[in-house]
Amino acid sequence: MDIVMVRLLGGLANQLFQYALGRTLAIRTGALLRFDTRDLDNDTLRDYALDVLNVRGCKASLAELDYFRPENSSKITLLQEKSFTYDPTIRLAQAPIYLSGYWQSEKYFFDMDSVLRQDITLATPLSQLGNELAKRMEATNSVSVHVRRGDYVTNSHTNTYHGAVGVDYINKSIQHIHTTHPSSVFFVFSDDIEWTKANLKSEAELVFVPARPDACDAEDMILMGRCKHHILSNSSFSWWGAWLNPSRRKIVIAPSPWFRNPENDTRDLYGERWLKLSIQTGDKVA
Image (cartoon, helix red, strand yellow):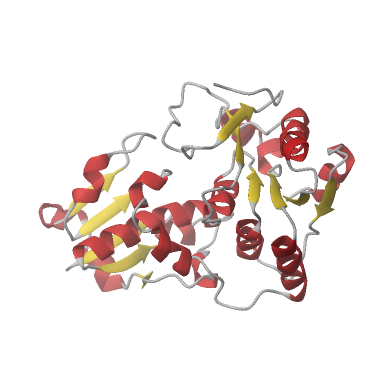
């Protein structure tokens, strides 16, 4: 079978990293792209999230999944992520391929950006509020500010692994852009918007994007990509919001370290021209 089978894990943004590499390999090898969603089927917190986008490929059939069983391992190229750093040999693999990992680096799909930006579009129109925000983002020097809290704060295991960006980091990031671009409008996205209203302090114009029960996460990600510049949390959701903006003139501010443990080698996760600021203090990091 000429198939690239992608094991999907995590939320929307993690699934997008997995999709991006799978799509790249499928195009390069001329193979079909299929998604193994069995982990998500048993996940009480995460669901298959790519169906709201114009992605290519589909969920694997039982017959396709059966082909990738261990007994056929001699016929299959199994690609298991070994570390966080980019592995250039991955892109040389031949189908049939089974991908298992997170693959959080644009180096895995650096030459497919135009294709992926077409795929990562909403399958349905923006909501009324989404349209209003998009028009305002287009008309101003817009900056997306993503503040990830949620389980980064409330779940002790997640907090130990990821940590949450400090308020000094966010305020100093806003000030950094506001100083050089004083007419900027900062569009704040968060899973705890009330916390951002209470803690973000700036002379700049802040627009707090309300939580909307009728909107999916994908719309917020697409809207972040409509902004001209970006301030990130240590979140793959933030990452994709910035990546979806194709401009080479964009300012992207990202927290460092990305994970609480600074020994995790994340050099290939950051974009080449991103400005790194301390996750806690907001001071510049070399």
